[in-house]
Length: 145
Image (tube, one colour):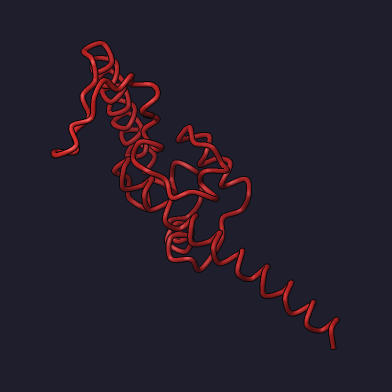
């Protein structure tokens, strides 16, 4: 009887872990697509799988293969561990962090962050580069279709 309870506990724990993992992956894939302004088809083309797979991942009906997750992490310069365990933020996806921007002050009432001009210039440059990369990527995808 104790052995059955132990087996049930391990089965239940593994199922729970899988559900949590699938939920994180699902949310994070949707967030990545949203932040990068990609359709399911665009993302599928970028990583070399069918659009229906992206839909299944985002709806939690399927879990991506390990190599697919690694490819997504590499393409979008994200840590695989974060994709699997953390709710990604826009800053995570765009590669920004408060430590990198030398925050001078936070205006609490408005929620705005003030940074010095040098840091702001580097942020603008990074965003511009990312926008150009995204445009180039979309052009390449259109040519492939």
